[in-house]
Length: 112
Length: 112
Image (tube, rainbow over all chains, first blue to last red):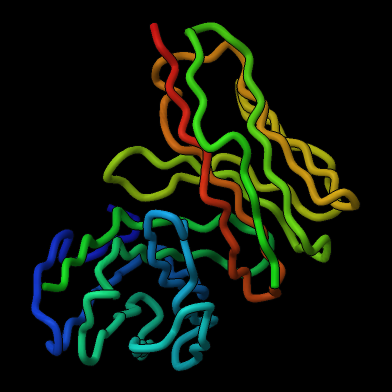
């Protein structure tokens, strides 16, 4: 089925561990995005990518790393997880131009 | 820095009422404004996208307006139904890369 898939849906880990959240889309959209959603802050942009091998920082990039070797995949890595990174993470994609973003169902990440 | 505010934060209405959700933004140099719906534990679903040159968009019982000069948008929901219960998010794009700045949302409850 066409769409955008995030994995895992739920993850519990410990501080200091490396964690990678996966995002896969089947539309071949050129733009992809990572957001985090927190009570009191709403959704905030972490990183985005305009095409394969092109990424840029958003509002809250510290502590995160992204890569995009293939158009359809946009993994997000927490290199050394901290409790402040406990959040719900959403991946989204869109074609270029004035087009709506399509969101995955999110990954709920808890860091103990 | 763009800031997006949504009022009210929560709204409870009986079924059948017409209602208006408000969104304001501080930087009027936007590419577009988008309205999303988020159900509990789910990702965001795009409802309407208004380009900066447009004044309104309609989809079924939903109508969104945009007044770029005053930095305001409204989402009008006609004849509300219990299935409309969700959180509604407003987001603006100031970037040619389609990155979005979100408001914190309005949580809507429509009672039968």
